[in-house]
Length: 369
Image (cartoon, rainbow, N blue to C red; front, top):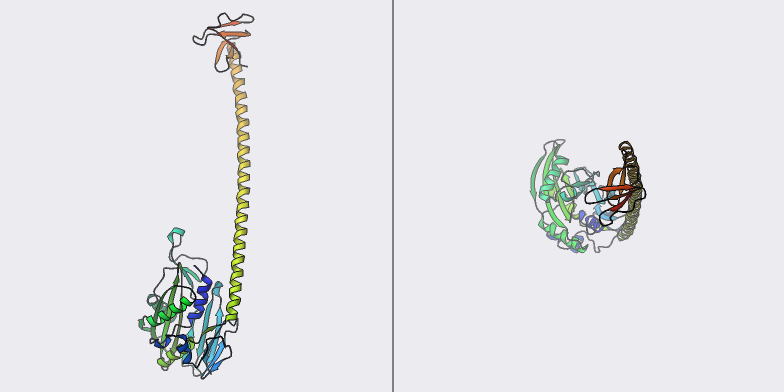
């Protein structure tokens, strides 16, 4: 991935922008969206309040703030499951009839299959929030997601799936602001189920966002036994008010850079250790080769000595001598100091003091042993 940290920050920014209203004409600009909430600035304002809403921050890190409905039971969090970053929030009305939410910390990061590196769809990665799966369009991904999480509820049934091109355009503009060009698809999945004899209307609004060989999914939505249009409008008002804390972002940038430096240093140390292990292995193998060569040389010398002893023993039995001119060898009768051999015919003359009878024919051969 070109810049996974920027991608994470982008997700933090746009995760809350998966609005529930299919008509997103009011999402043409952030300024228009904020004006609906009487917000006059996009700056981080952790204590700012507007009519009917109160601005809240995630209590753990103060990474973001968002306007939540006043008087509702609300909870915000920035989750880091298995090293990933997830923005999450939920609000429940005082009468318990409506619940709105955004983010899901159980959604994994996906890697595209790559048979070249032995990565096939469905293989286990050892990380529950990292899966190998082809990029999936939102209108294909989220109906299955809804069935997985809500399909066991009484009277559950899907009531519709539709794309959200206006939201997609808005998210692409957000991505461009971060210098990213992810592949984005969006979808709205509507469904209903029964609870305590009441029909609950619900909708999940999701996006799938891909960057090179990685992609992610994110959601928000509502469940209500009351007016679904009002619940839809409420979640829209909530999500467009999302703001990232620039101080947190700066700290996160510094943390990310430190992690990258540590990772690079660790990589260099691993490479150096690997090189040292490789060199030690090479030295050990060379020592083994040298020892094997010495052992072989010693064996060859022993074999040559054994061959000589065997040859001498045979000569003794046959009363022969082995003679040589330096390049050739031959067998002659024993008992002489000098031998004159005709190399062409094999004839020889043995003598203790006799001079070469004919140097043009005979060569002077001597005992080999």
